[in-house]
Amino acid sequence: MPLTHRALAPDLARGLMLLLIAVAHAHMYLSGHQTGFRGYALDGGLVDRLVAGLQILLVDGRALPMFAALFGYGLAQLANRQLAAGKSWPETRRVLRRRSLWLLAFGFCHALLLFFGDILGAYGLVGLVLIGFVRRQDRALLWAAGVGLALHVVILAAFGLLTVSAPKGDTPAAMADPIEALVMRLIGWSGMTPTYFAVSVVSAFLLGIWAARRRLLEEPAAHRPLLSRVAIVGVGVAVVGGLPLMLVDTRVWAPSMAVSVAAYVLHSLTGIVGGLGYAAIVGLAVSRMRHGAPGPVVAALAACGQWSLTCYLLQSVIFVAVFAPYAGGLGAKAGDAAASGIAVAAWLTTVVLAAAFRGRRGPAETALRRLTYGSQARTRGDRRTAEALKG
Image 1: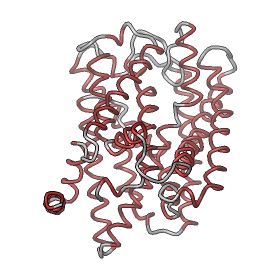
Image 2 (image 1 turned 30 degrees about the horizontal axis):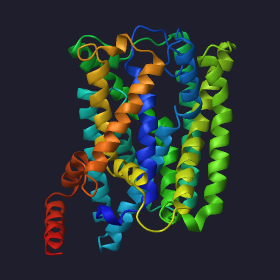
Image 3 (image 1 turned 90 degrees about the horizontal axis):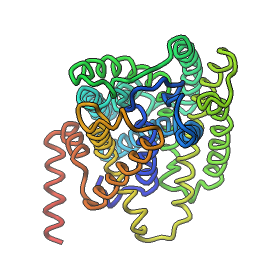
Image 4 (image 1 turned 90 degrees about the vertical axis):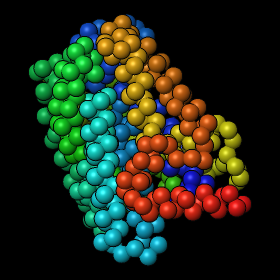
């Protein structure tokens, strides 16, 4: 689909959520601290603890589910475009699986070279395993999403117990030896990818397909009552559900092990609803915008969303350059607050870059498209270029 024909709300949501992804990941590059459930330093200063508390409450475990929902939404849109173009379902399924397989490969390369906490692999895995749900009835979607939530609780409880019994220290992103860091990144990624799939991605992915069938983000003005309810309930539940863990990880509250683990599970579970609430807020904002071209700020954020794959990978490039011991080395000196400040600057850099090339696909998006469609993508691109030159 030409970029000029894309709906504004999904791209705007992706662009904004990349900010949350950046601040959620930056502190994982820090070293030399004993950390809590969400990886923030337990010995940080007052400002560090305030920043960590806000991020636990509003960011951690909220951005990833939203991205998963947007991935499901986009995959359903892609399937609809293929079917509308006259492709059969088996042909469409092959395209979606090929795209998911390449996304999994992108995730592997991302982990190999840059960041163990890659999320692309989980999205590729969910596309490979659950693509059949694009054609399933709503009842099957919602039932499977419910099963995913139950699995989420069980796995998170196990991880919570592991965290309590073996407190977390430095991550592979903070290791000084680049070869050791590479090996540990791959080990971490191989375990985290199926975990992300089972814990944070499945339910949100399926609900994203459900939302795409109703065009909630493509036609937000027609769905304001539903979007309003999702926004209010989703964000409210996420804030209330995140409060206990925020108090635990900032050392304001020191409950028993069982209560701490329950707070960890509750935080993550309510984060799925919160991610959906954030997407609904963006839809509501777009529904109230005047018709016509968006303003420069909105256009820049949407451009970042159109370049979401490229901008996501660029964040890791910047973080490695700034934080890694074998590069900038700030990971051993910065605290959580400074890391989040650097994350905001990195995100703004990607927004400016995407805006400067607005109207063009990002390099990672172009590569994924060509790997998915092969010669068809190049043919369509050449045709659009010729039409633009004639115009």
